[in-house]
Amino acid sequence: MWQQAPENTLESLRHAIQQNDGVEFDVRLTQDGEIILHHDTKLSVPKQKRPHSYAWTENHTLDELTSLGFVSLRSIFEDQQIMTEWREKGKMACIEFKRPHPRALYGGGIFGKKQHISHVATMMEKAENLLKEFEIPSNNTVYYAFHRGMKSSIKLAGIKRPWAELTPYVPPFGTHYTKRMRGGIQFLTTSIARLIGTHRQSGASMSPCAVEYFIPPKNIIPIGFTGGLHGSKATRFRKHQRGFPIYVWPTALKIEHDVLSAGLTGLTDCSDPSITWLPSGHARWTLPATRPLDANQQLSLERATQENHKEVLRELQTETMPWSECDAQRRGELVDMWRKKWLWDESTSAILERSQEASPPWESIRLIGHRGSGKTSRPVLK
Image 1 (cartoon, rainbow, N blue to C red):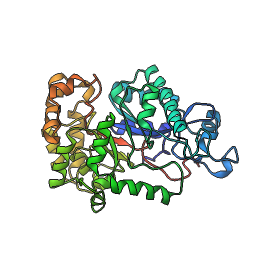
Image 2: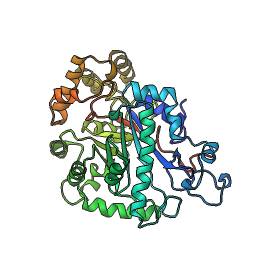
Image 3: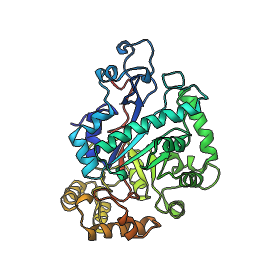
Image 4: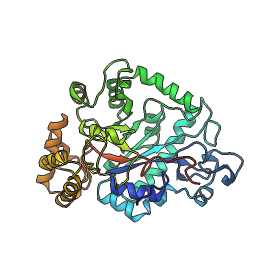
């Protein structure tokens, strides 16, 4: 029986990047200027295990954090299994840069905008050096953060890779309630059309967004254009989207099929390989971009029943070829099918021309492991 590893750990990332089209993980800057994988502003271990009286993650050194079981960003690159999937098989990595609490080291205070911009830029520069050292193709990575100065940080760091700003904005301070309340106000005033338009105009490469933009009744809360996963709302949204990648979180199992079918990339908290049948009544295919199905194979998947779906999945796994191994004809047929289904703007030839050898097109619909194999309970490391 598979057991889920703690989030943002090597074991969790190693499993998820093989199970899915890629992984998402969170990074912070340590006291000694290194990058560590960690989500929370406070060190996520039992209080009695903390090496200091203060709890902020940024106030600890790399050695202190790794001795507790957390992993450095460099260790991700030094893992051969992860590198094979990421660099050679075209898997995606979404790197979320976390700002510290205003009172923590590097925090800069609530109004320290210049410090916030500089801090995120410093982290991106360090990450970029590792990506270049280990020769990660640019289309296999996206940088993003809950950071209103993201464009300024990108410019300051001289980043050329894909990036985006996480919206609605959730601040790095406050209680769970106050954070969600502030994000809710921005959600109310930011329609999905405005969200995409803002990202396009800023030069961002994609738009990460909350699943509430597509699920009723919350999808009718934002003032303006309403998104949806079915029927006329989904069709109208695709015409507006025109191939601009939308990454949706969290993508629960019950809506996973609908999210992917609507032309959206899903961030999942479930990378359990034993789950092959979705609550929606569909067989589960976790590699839509890096092991893509053609029209006939997709039809076989859709027609699978709960009784025969495992046999269908075994046949498809035998028949299908990874994107990295597809010839030009196969790639052209797949992109042409995707363009027509999801109303992508660019021509098939243009999309293929700017695609990197082992990487699926930037517009491809993916399933991404959130924080590796999924979010886990607190404390992360017991």
